[in-house]
Image 1 (cartoon, one colour):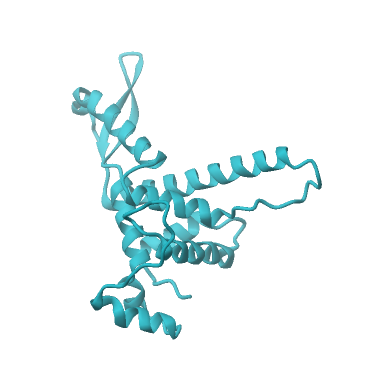
Image 2 (cartoon, rainbow, N blue to C red):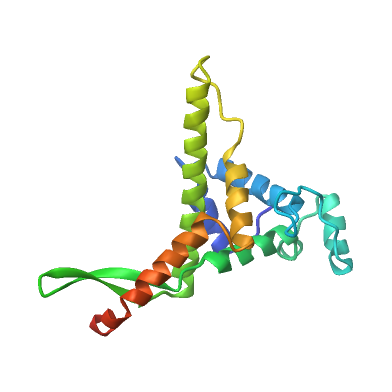
Length: 196
């Protein structure tokens, strides 16, 4: 399965990559997209296949033949869900620490579109990795057998859940963004001290 040459998607692959293994990161991301394709946004627990709209029928026919072009991929449903999720969890501000009369204050600063996407991707991948790690640890504690037993739920499942939760405007990543926005709103009086 081909992934289009998009800066946001390449950034996501680079964040997923560990020890220079980009092929493995591509495999995880492809499995995530396939799982997103099966999810139904109306019911978050339903894994029914998606009923295509008439205008998307040619794209899905090409997919069935494994003829993936970048335009067909970008017109697909998983990419739409991915970009919508990214838009829902992208922060508008960041807080930078500055020294003011002997104390450290957090000054809100607006973010460019590139940095908004970067923070959103980092939060999505970081939250999925943390949940995967915690699940693996709990599985390891419950299994008294061999220590080499792998987790039953791979990383792509946790990444799919985080992206789907963000698509539905819920989940841990959205809470993190809302907390950041509340802090920025509370410190908006310090905005005048911004010099960058």
